[in-house]
Image (cartoon, rainbow, N blue to C red; front, side):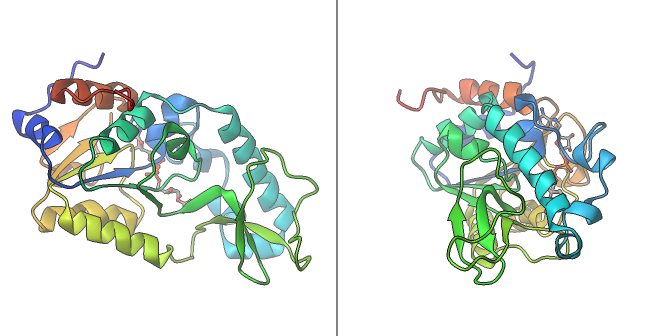
Length: 253
Ligand code: OAD
């Protein structure tokens, strides 16, 4: 159990009925064995994102880009949600206004039972037709041959994730922004708070008067602005927070 000492105010907000927004990033999946982007050994240390995560990279070499995403799909499929994912799903089950806004594309929140969620950066498990723009789910860990093709029109499919130089899905971001303005409590978990516009959501919430707490073993550019920073791993800190507030981790309880 993490040796964290949440403030009485944070515990009271967790126990209360006010609206909650949780914003997550890659750090929440680290204890599931999925590399983050910017930590030592992170994904962007070995690969220049411009060669695999931009529309131009896909136009230049779709098979290379697909091999990168196929590898990530296989890795995510083999991973399991960790106590951080389960704690967030348990918080949702307390049945107050709740939203999870995740930057993660790995599907682990969904597998832990989160339902009120917006995917700000898309999903590894959705494919989009490059000709028609239609999307469908595909849970197959390994796709072959690469690049996959649209069953309806034969055009190439691409992963329905947000690449650099692309806008976020507007409806999803709007929903997250509304939740940030309405929230009493915002938990910012496992994100470096470097990538906008997702990184703006806690600032929007602070400006609207929310109590913002950050859970991250490291300080980030957001840390100086939050009301509380809990330095620890999400898989230990979040269950400890729920325990302090008397919220059961077992959603059925
Ligand atoms: P980053 O890799 O930038 O940051 C991960 C954060 O998680 C760091 O601040 C770590 O200190 C923290 N961390 C590591 N282990 C943790 C743990 N066990 N518990 C809690 N925190 C932990 O990942 P993101 O902030 O998610 O975008 O990156 C944002 C976006 O940049 C991604 O969605 C991706 C990337 O480029 C796109 O691909 C569009």
